[in-house]
Image (cartoon, rainbow, N blue to C red; front, top):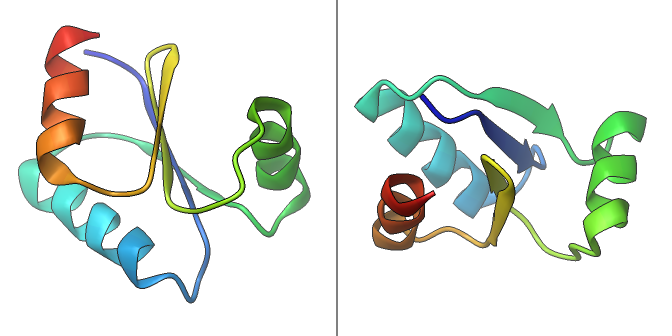
Length: 76
C-alpha cells in the first residue's frame, strides 16, 4: 500500500471533499494542516501554493480530482 499524506486547511471545501472521499474508500492517510509549521514547511519545500495537496508515494497532486487521484494511486 502506498503512503498517502493529505495537506489541508480548515476552511477549504475541496480539502473536505478529498478527505471525505479518502475516508469513504477506506484509504489510510496522514492528515496534515497546511497552517501548522510542519505542514507549511513541507509544502514550501515542493512549492505548492494551493490546497489540497496529496502526496502519493513520491509524487504530489495539487488540487482535488477523484479520477486523477485514482489514476496516480494505481500508477505510482
